[in-house]
Amino acid sequence: MTYSRTTRKSNHTPQRSCTVCRAKADKSDLIRIVRSPDGKAVVDVMKKLPGRGAYICPDSDCIERAKKSGSLAHALGIVISADFWNDLEENAKTFGSNPALKIRSVLGLSRKSGNLIIGTDNIDREKRKVLVLTASDCSESVKKFAESHENIALEMNIEELSESIGTRGGVQIVGLPINSGFAKKLMSLQKRERGNAV
Ligand SMILES: [Zn+2]
Image (cartoon, rainbow, N blue to C red; front, side, top):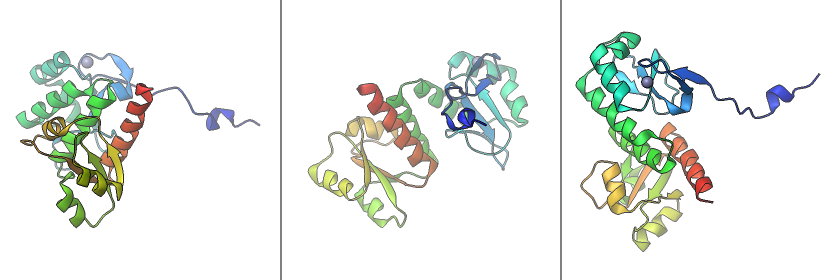
């Protein structure tokens, strides 16, 4: 008896269809939207949330069509708010296959969801273990501070980091609880980004 089929890492990626155009694509190339327990549509960044879900291409055509036709609302069985469409468009813009862009998108969503910890003081106050992410042009003292945590040196500067989390600027360091899905996602994206750079 051989176990090679189950032990070998499979190259096969699960396929899903866009709710709107019906095109089939790798699961990782589509945006998953899920109906939350309180009946709202949310972008499922980690593609792990339980509940009724639907996939859509990360492209403005499909999003426009979903809005007009109501197909996404129908697939999820809910009424979709204007806020959600803005989130979805934002997410689609930064989706792509570029890990650097995905990192920005994940940071933005983690801020929106209230998981992101901004600045050394707030990170210090956090009781849980934190993954910290620093801007490429952060100060020496922030760099030192980061070294006492699990850390990622981002390939974006203070301005870009601030922009990706929707603040007015000056953000040198952010943190995420290390056991959160967001932190795990960022660590795997960072690995991919490094891989691409070689
Ligand atoms: Zn589509």
